[in-house]
Amino acid sequence: MSANPTPQKSTNLHVGDAKPGCKKNDPILVIDNVKKTFGGLTAVDVEHLEIPRGAITALIGPNGAGKTTLFNLLTGFDTPDTGTWSFLGNQLAGVPSFKVAQMGQVRTFQLTKALSLLTVLENMKLGAKNQAGEKLINALIPSRWKKQDQEFEAKAMELLKRFKLDAKKDDFAGSLSGGQRKLLEMARALMTDPTLVMLDEPMAGVNPALTQSLLEHVLNLKNDGMTVLFVEHDMHMVRHIADWVVVMAEGKVVAEGAPDTVMREQAVIDAYLGAHQDTDLGVVTGRIQVISEEDK
Ligand SMILES: Nc1ncnc2c1ncn2[C@@H]1O[C@H](COP(=O)(O)OP(=O)(O)OP(=O)(O)O)[C@@H](O)[C@H]1O
Figure 1 (cartoon, rainbow, N blue to C red):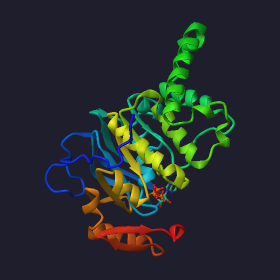
Figure 2 (cartoon, rainbow, N blue to C red; figure 1 turned 90 degrees about the vertical axis):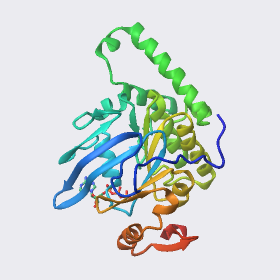
Figure 3 (spheres, helix red, strand yellow; figure 1 turned 180 degrees about the horizontal axis):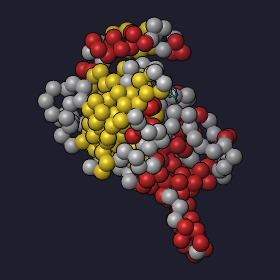
Figure 4 (tube, helix red, strand yellow; figure 1 turned 135 degrees about the horizontal axis):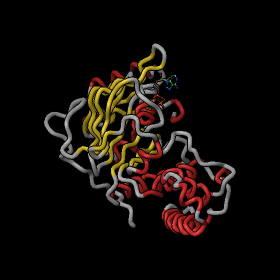
């Protein structure tokens, strides 16, 4: 599989004006009135949002905007106060996380969930088991679980090769670098051949040496026919690979559009300025460049 250095952007994704809640030509996820409060704080309050199929969508917004909470709700890791959402036309509200994964919607975590005292290969196989759900009948009949285990191992090795982690298959996950853990997390998410891959801050804590490789892997997901929705603060990554950008602030969707245009919108500039008193917002060739304190 070869990486594409200048990604082919998907266009013609939306219907009518690019604005919060706009319809998509071919939505994979449709979200309606999803609200989540923690005590008196409204973390998520999304009236309507559609995620286009077969494209890469970035979910951006200042710290505390509600991005991770929305991910948790959509994948069954948390329950909303109100709201419905459908994935490929199937209603998902109330569906537990392992079933959501079985249906083809998987996610990674901001803080990688790799189990440090298991090997890389064991992590991969466990990911598949968690996502596939344990069938009691398989656990009771040795020939069945052995066959399933062999299948998981073959699939895991194929993916580990693709992510250049095969040489590390017997290493403890705890010995991997931050970037390698992100790769492991992404590889593990692919164990069940998902349709929609949701990545929570894939670039956070990644050494620059692995950045390009991670970008290529995300682009390859789309080239392989998957839909990607990712949360990211790295605006270079967003501009480079996203076909569509959804901007959240204070729980709401405040803007949507193609990367180059959406970052010029006043609502987006206001959202970042409002929440990031310590963030330097420069306008580079008419687009927002967010420079965090760590980048300086
Ligand atoms: N379990 C929780 N209990 C209480 N408050 C929470 C909980 N989870 C999130 N919040 C609050 O909800 C709001 C949204 O948080 P969330 O983590 O979803 O934002 P985010 O956009 O992902 O931020 P970041 O970019 O910093 O990861 C924040 O004010 C956060 O403090």
